[in-house]
Every structure is written in C-alpha cells, then in structure tokens.
Length: 214
Image (cartoon, rainbow, N blue to C red):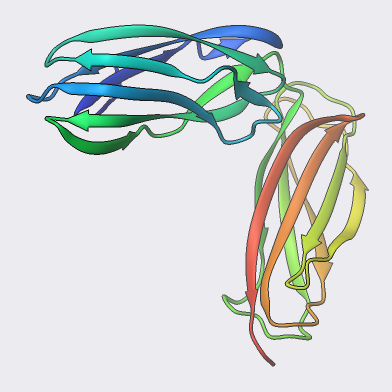
C-alpha cells in the first residue's frame, strides 16, 4: 500500500462502471503515536465526473499498527482523480494529512484531454497575443469530438476563444489544437479547454496566464 507517514493507505477498486459505486479505503497507522477523532474524506478534483457522497467517515481511534477499512459511495460519471484527507489528533495534538492524487477510471473513455499550455513568455504584456495549445489523446478508436476554448479575464468576463471539431483518433494517437487571445488588461487570465463527446464532457483543463502592463 502507498505510504505517506504516519499513514499507509489503499483505495480501490481503481476502475468502476458509471453510476452509483462503492470504493473501499483502508488506513493503517504506521507511526508510534495514537491517532484519534479522525475525520476521513475522499476529495474529488473534478466533482462533475466523480464525487463522494455522504459526510465521510469517522474513526474514533487508530492505534500504532492498527488498520481500518471504510466504504465510500461515489457518483461516477467519468474518470477523475481524488485524494484522501484526514483531520484529527496525533498524540493529542491537532494534525492534517493528505494523500497524493489517485486516478479512478470510470467506464471506457474514448479520449482524454492530456494537457493545456500557454505558449508564451512567463509574463506576456497587454496587447500581445497569447497562444494556447491543447493535446488530445485517443484511448480507443474514436470519431471526432468537440473541443472548446474559453478565457476568464481579470474583469470577470468569460469569453469564447473558439470551438474545434477534432479529427478521428486511434488508440494512443495524439493531436494538438490551438486557440489565441489578445489580453486587453493586466492581471490573471485563466484559460479553459473542454472536450465533449456530444453533450458529455470527457475532459477539462485549465491554464493560468499572468499578463503585465505593456
């Protein structure tokens, strides 16, 4: 099982079908101190695709070398990453613990949105175009999908940067698509890329661009 001291943990299964499913989280205290009053949560990085139901689990006490398993019900739509958090007391002192991210596969995805990058200098100036590139990878032979680009400006305006029909991809094949925007004000711009199969979102990525005065 993976370890992040003072907890060894395992979350499974790592592949489920869409719908209401159950995951089992096993926690083991590998430290020397007793852990008490533990609030245990499964936290999704994309709650649209996968979210844990209920209020989490409560563990009154987990002594050294003691192990506990708890079921968590999840609403699974698409593949998503989750992480585990634990808040409680360690030898009577408050502590917080988080795991690295764990990928939970849901069903058979057609494709994935691998990355989104701003192809610019670190702090582009106002009035200079910023090009953003998104990489799409086929997971099985798939027809064309819809890729949308948007930007959230410092003024709070959510603007479309365009919509692209991707080409048909084979398993493992990748294609790169781009969009550009012209920043009109300094500040943080957040670029979004969304990948759709019909009305079903199968991928989402964000990129941050900090624009400086020209």
